[in-house]
Image (tube, rainbow, N blue to C red; front, side, top):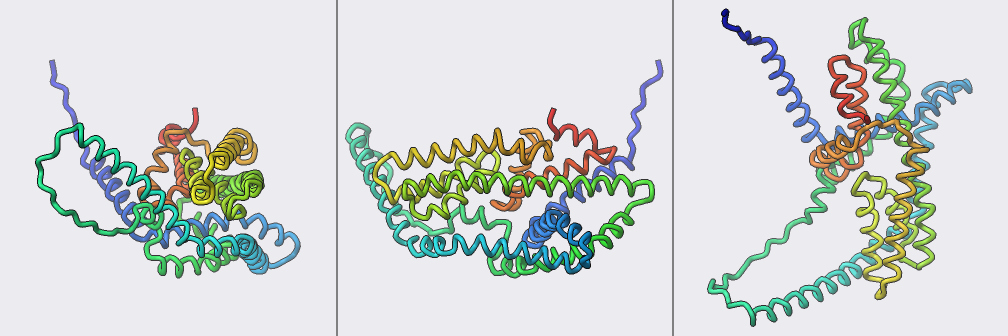
Length: 356
């Protein structure tokens, strides 16, 4: 009987090694240049959202550069309006932060005293430790939560400088869209250009629908939550309502994040349970309605990711960019799936990431 021979292909092994090295280089690049990459990703997403408005202005005989300028100014005016509406409450909250922090420390101190009393009461039952009492030294560090939230943006100064370029990036992307689109397609061979164009159009449609749909869902949720907070006279209700609605849009952990800010304010404001129950029930019920009624209607199945893929994507982007990574995890993972769905060798991965 002839012996079976197993041939080893050096070229296949080398190609696999190069892919792994390339993936590692890409991950390292987007990690260390996170503030630049995040600004570019956000600029591209906003440009996708504003592009239909620019096209509409073009049909009205306006030059494209003028339409792009008007849409960018309109977006900046919208952001300014949102900031103006919550500015007074935000300033008041910042002024009251020392008082709120003092109240929280007082509550924590009361809990520590109670825990110390419990330890003393149990020490009469349990035998005393024979270990010597060694004095401990406490080193004050930055809060791990703050480190997590700021991980992707680097230093605050560098991030501020980078964000200042975002309106200019959006304007240039909108103005030069046709040139950028053609130049990008020219990077591919003739037989793959149609495939690349389908991928880019699919990504643009997905991002546009996802962003606009979720903004509308968040606005409706805020319109339902804020009056309830105002009715129970919660401090900074105009700020806490939209914040709870926006944070609750994050998959899986959104409810906990949405509940945290108003409950902290209620902790230092109220000394009875009814407001806590009202806040919790309101946020949970609105989140349930948004997830099961509003999101399927307004966002639909544009993302088409299964639960496991969303979870892994949130873990990866959260680890890479912190809090901002959690916000961008779903659209970035959906973009990766759109690429896999339209590239023949990667289609099995796209099917694995998609819904059944």
